[in-house]
Figure 1 (cartoon, rainbow, N blue to C red):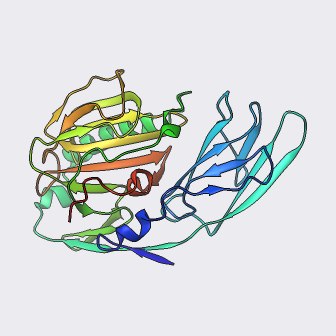
Figure 2 (spheres, rainbow, N blue to C red):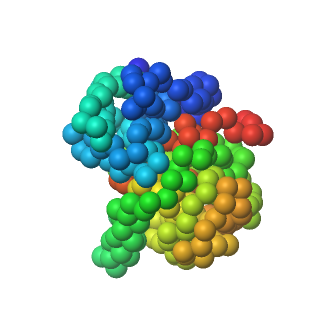
Length: 278
């Protein structure tokens, strides 16, 4: 079992991208077999792919994605049925992780125990985000690789659980990168802007990008959003600026990546940060 905190993250980044030998020409997988990882699959066009019995989207060219969530089971079964009637099955052994617990005290009471009015805002925000995450576009930008949207001190890691004013919260579904106010935030991969919002309760100025097949990324707490909903963006393009909007204790970017509602570890997708920041 692997324990990952801010000080141990470098060990995971050394995993990089692993290419697993194909059982046959009908199934090839790339990516780390660890909780929080993303696997990119390649198969014959027209094949039907199931992951633990659930059919997953396959592009015309045979690309598909598998998300290994924070608490993914130790074994994941992938099955491919090709157009000629043959099948290929593979049991993937998934490495488990342990996660840090972080305590933050002194937050305003209304942000830890929101009022009825705030709860309505939170509900509206959640529905907007859920609608984006439920969409499965035909884009295949997720297969083009990811880079860090900025360089900075890693102040929050994937999977950690926060205790706010003594109350446990949901596990952290992304990474936090601390950087000065106004630092440019760049698109880590190609995609289409699926949501922009100027003032969400928790995440402030919030942006989401669709990378295809239900794989999307979210950028929170920004001071400015510099793209529009529906706009296509390219890897490395400036999409916003670091800020401290919403519930934030200082300027930083929250970056999350998910496959539908399965949160993934952005650090596993992006690899080592360049330039490295202590």
